[in-house]
Length: 379
View 1: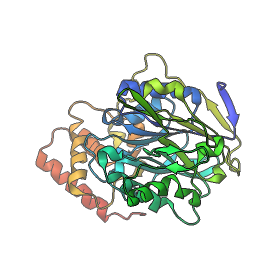
View 2: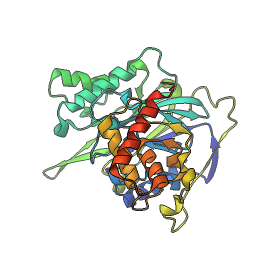
View 3: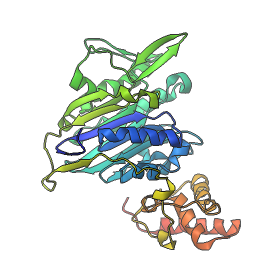
View 4: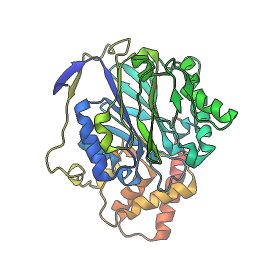
């Protein structure tokens, strides 16, 4: 790929990054720069990396990003989550888009691209060997949300599905289910969403009969390659290229999948062309260097993404975490502060009021909840 390129393609990469440390996550993002992706969909973005994904992604040329931990409704503890990064702006859809356990294992958004609006979903379906019935529950929730009449012309579903078990040369898909209900739930996404214009992009481009894989199971010295990572996309997005990028296998236990689309309606009338630049971070650039100290002007923001009628225990906890982060000098960059969350609201007020008693912090939190609930909202 050349350093400067103009075309009419949309380039998507989905990758399970295996709970990468901050340093390995940085290596993964650096490695992907030669692909010049427009949208990155990432799974298993670990807690350490998720604390500063915006800084890391911004360092690597992605102006717009979001991590599911910012929008979760449940408390994931030390669990990893999903992330989107894009060269174009996008709007994150509510976490309850998928009514399933472990909501932070999914992220949905509407991307505002030169081709028009594109609805995107990325998920990490947890393995049944560890999570049992949670796996079919997740599949059912995904299907129920996406199996709709008259879906958007442009949409995709991607991620790590821990499925199928195998595929035959003539396209027969075998899933893992241990009972009839499980099999039906798993097939509902892996097979049945085709009827709702979400088609396996890799198979559309390459057909069946190859030995494609994205993860390898090992048992007693034997290896069992599996194709667990997928992109399902609408026909009008028009997948023209799809490949598993095995040159990056040393950076994760999963292989990234790249799909290139040439949307059938072409560029929107307001977009003349797409220009791409391969981006490499300057030598010796640090995360701190891309995250300058914010002044009290950090109280300003563009979008309030706090949940309406918040759960007291969890939201209260994130608010206090943000406040305590001011004690050790933690700073937040402009991209983080463009959106108002409960955690960075605590940080903003902590910066403003400095030393404050626990009782007063609690009182300020309750006031913020009341103020939010009393304010008019669009949703």
